[in-house]
Length: 336
Image (cartoon, rainbow, N blue to C red; front, side, top):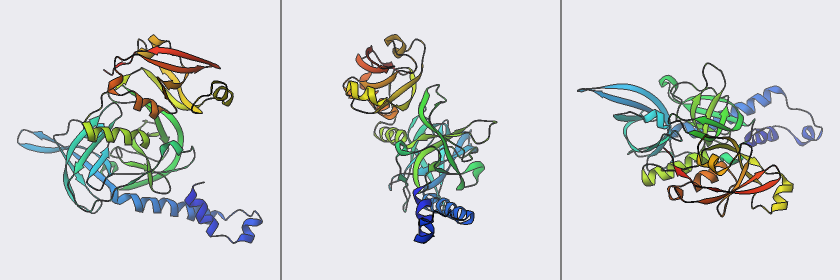
């Protein structure tokens, strides 16, 4: 149960009812849920934009698609999906109040399906970022976007699963993806997935068709890192290991025995054939706990460590295999 929902319930009952352990009526539960969703939507909707893709055809210009995005700085930086802005000759953004503005592409990262554009407009309202590392399965998830051009459409559901992997259009696996059943449709891509407090926890990116209720969002902790690098450099060059994985706990007795710096690591789900990881001897279900001298507590930690400077530089990869601690020598390559 979300914090907002709990607070609403607590305020709506006197102490004697709560002390007696009487369950609140269904109507009050639904009202509290509705209030949480409506409040989150009201806080975030002014930051959500409709992104229109325009292509030139000779002397003419024609619409070639649309998606969503959201303002995350007061000076006009907007986060969206890479596949939304790909192949655009011009980008046009529409705000909730109807204002339109041309958008400049700052940088795009097809490997994480994220892009940053910028608009020069006053009175912008940036979103508040949450912490996707604290997201729990079952918590309320609210998606806001412009499916089929219907601006600021709100859908709600729950976080269905964490730590999913999703293959981007470039072919790279995006790790630590959030699965939700908040309904997404074409045009939702790039919009925010938020919690009941109106904090952005993900960037909506994909649906599984023809399934219903299987939708995905890139974790906001990953998106914040990518956005910062795109603003700084316009692109991201990564070192490549060739593993897909998810954040997972390390057994407590193993943490104590080896005096590990963290209680979590990255559990390897699969290893790409011929990759640096396979050549180093990494196996599925290994838990990566350190890269060189740096502890690895999450997928985001590993991504941050695999910077351009790591390409071609040998490093020691520490993994937990069963109850054994193994050190492997790995030589990251450039991500093709």
